Image 1 (cartoon, rainbow, N blue to C red):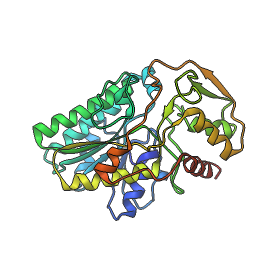
Image 2 (image 1 turned 120 degrees about the vertical axis):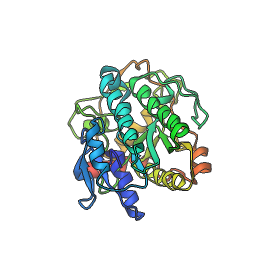
Image 3 (image 1 turned 45 degrees about the vertical axis):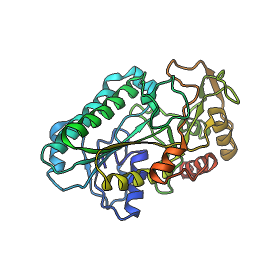
Length: 319
């Protein structure tokens, strides 16, 4: 598992371990932390953007498949720092895939991607046939890696799967409480929890005039445990077949940012001052997936609602 010490990656690792998979983790620890993982998990601190670093690990063990959760997130941040996003989200995957296909015997690859590949003008709900039109360096870099996987499937027989979702939220009892970007920046809802804990003065709310119930953007949070469950099901599907396949995760219960914030206030019993600003050009008024794809393709559905996501993450943060 590449990127397995991060917020989503560590949840996937723990889920796979409970299902008796043997898991080895590679992580550069830019956003991940070693303590997110059980001490018994074989761990290598490796940057896949450095060619020799990848090849050294591949020489040390044999693997049935590789899962990557190493992509940097944060569309706004990617506009300020496009080079690190293209380096980490595309070039590191390029080096990793080149090493895997160079006689290492690993022919199966699963990529965790997100809805940034669709851009801000996407029509919802998002399904497997929705056109990809990225408009940020985050979306461009992920889309480039997805295109590379498709090309390798045709040229070299690589079997791959892509699992896309909107926002992961919540926390496992022993896991990580939300992602933090390399410069300490937080994304919603981590930024809201930071205000509730007194670490930040106010929460920026981008856009209040969208055509939603309260004017804020409509999003599709999925509990990180449900994401991990979907990844495990996609792994099982990938092990049984050849070729490439893409999966879209949708909760079936999209919520507005305002509704999400109200739930955080109710659970934390804290005041969360907000600063309401105009949305960025890339902020989609709605971004949510069609739950039918996960149900039909994987036999999966999101089991945990927004209240449980908030309660689980708040419980862990208070520790």
